Amino acid sequence: NTTLKERLAELIPLELENVKRVRAEHGKKSFGPVIVDQLYGGMRGLPALIWDGSVLDAGYSFPRQNHPGVPGAPSQGPPGGSEPLPEGLFWLLVTGEVPTQEQVTELSKDWAARSAIPEFVEEILDRCPPTLHPMSQFSLAVTALNHNSAFAKAYQDGVSKKEYWGPTFEDSMDLIAKLPNIAGRIYRNVFGQGKLPAIDPAKDYSHNLATLLGFGDNHAFVELMRLYITIHSDHEGGNVSAHTGKLVGSALSDPFLAFAASLNGLAGPLHGLANQEVLIWLSKMQAKIGENASDEAVKEYVWATLKGGQVVPGYGHAVLRKTDPRYTAQREFALKHLPQDPLFKLVGQIYNIVPDILLEAGKAKNPWPNVDAHSGVLLTHYGLTQMQFYTVLFGVSRAFGVAAQLIWDRALGAPLERPKSYSTAAIDKIFKGR
Ligand code: NMX
Ligand code: MLT
Image (cartoon, rainbow, N blue to C red; front, side):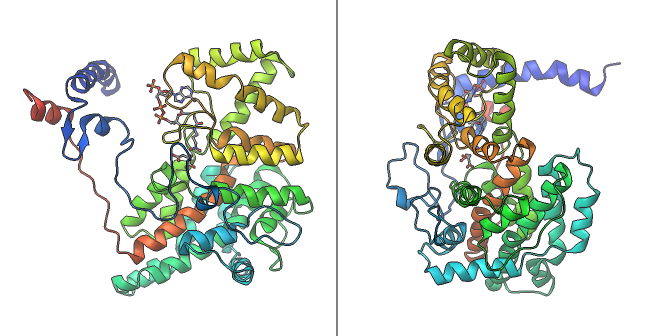
């Protein structure tokens, strides 16, 4: 009387062995344009997607200004600010061109004008239990925005394929514009931070976001939001959130549905949730070994993490093979604004310890920190200490890259994504004797 789950538990070790054998025998063999290992290995390195918005170089060997994901990318900041404005970055992502100050200001105004969310979406958020993770609430609200999708309506009205990009553009602009109100409402509902103020059309996007979170009077925090949104917006097309948005969009699901799917991917601990995980890990470390702990104590804690079968959050990357330039950008911000912050010092201490340990452990291909190793520390410094909220900010930012990609996919008539899958038995059969 074996149950389904019990039978599955018996089969899993057998199939693990089978896959191991098939990969050992055939893994390095060519299969069409790829090798068999790439079918099993999360498609790592597989040339499979086109996205012109940003490109990633494992060694980061190209000039900063060509990488729209880092400061130094052309931007039109407001007077008194030195960080790039996400408005400028979005223009750059969509057109490949640097906007004028006037064009950036018009974009801020346009987004402010589109920023209100429907009352029923406010009600959905207000009815969410505060125990529901902010990312789940975020995804629910973005899905619900599809109620007013220009693309979905145009499709129902029989729009020609050639015109898809127009309503996709309108939805994408609405999506980006409405995210601060959604994020602000989630933050205030979950963490009891009072009533949501109104968007100010005279302020830039990041300033408004900071205000909705309750930090609009803090100039350094506003600057942090500008930097934060800019550097998290796009990271070529293959990362989980960007690729998910593209995949779901390829079914002609509108930008709200496609981006909600992106958010569900971003909510995973190996992707965007890592920024929350880093802070949880640091807090646990401090609780265990105390503040101002010795290098020896930190090393022991890192080894205990690895020996417990867990990953060191904020370290490693599927593509990068050096310190993430977005980590460095945040470190530079911290050196400028909060050089004495104890948590910043701990992050620096860890940077000197973790890579050697990961190298010694011998598994991770990239022992260096990624973007998520640093972001939470900056937010914590300014009083945004609710770590469960951190990935929501990543999500607000990632909308810029996903939206730009959806607009271009519809403009270029990108087809339905539908790769071919194979069974292990088929691989075994195809390559027997080869
Ligand atoms: N700590 C411990 N082990 C690691 C780490 C790490 N930080 N990074 C990679 N490994 C392991 C990995 O789990 C794998 O083990 P196994 O063979 O047992 O499955 C092995 O090293 C080889 O993995 P890689 O090929 O180096 O990495 P992969 O491309 O598969 O995954 C990440 C990339 C980012 C998922 C991985 O480095 C990781 O889990 N890092 C920690 C989580 C994290 O910081 N994620 C955020 C990434 C950035 N983002 O925002 O999305
Ligand atoms: C991202 O920004 O999406 C992450 O660095 C993950 C990735 O690029 O794969």
